[in-house]
Length: 159
Image 1 (spheres, rainbow, N blue to C red):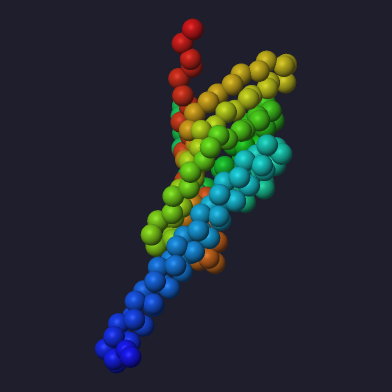
Image 2 (cartoon, helix red, strand yellow):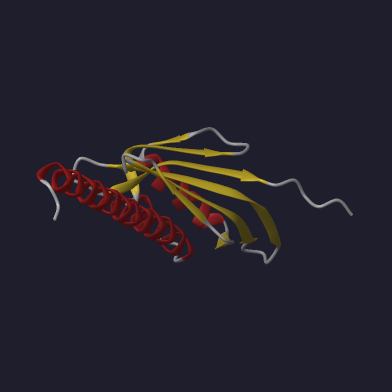
């Protein structure tokens, strides 16, 4: 027979385990949202749809890319992509990704190696490899939007 004190302790333990399970589930849901958002960005970009790609951006979005000034805001991001897409065709492929979620569930980090295959209108093809880090931030409506996009290309392989 369980006394009142032991029953209270068992109920408290059960509540703690349930809360921990819910927290893991919530983090898993955020990780799925972040992964889906990052893969959506890549798919929209590969479809040459600058508007759809920029729709993943948070209002306070900043893109940080090697060798160019920061891109601030979704409108600037869309304009920059339209210019890129008019001058070259880019096929963006990702390697094995990892997703890390903040304990509070308000930030999620997607990280993956990438390869850009860039085809110029005259047919010249170049490849760029590097690492893409996409940080998604929870918005007021509960959605996760791309807050920071950081791309760092790797040095060319030595002959």
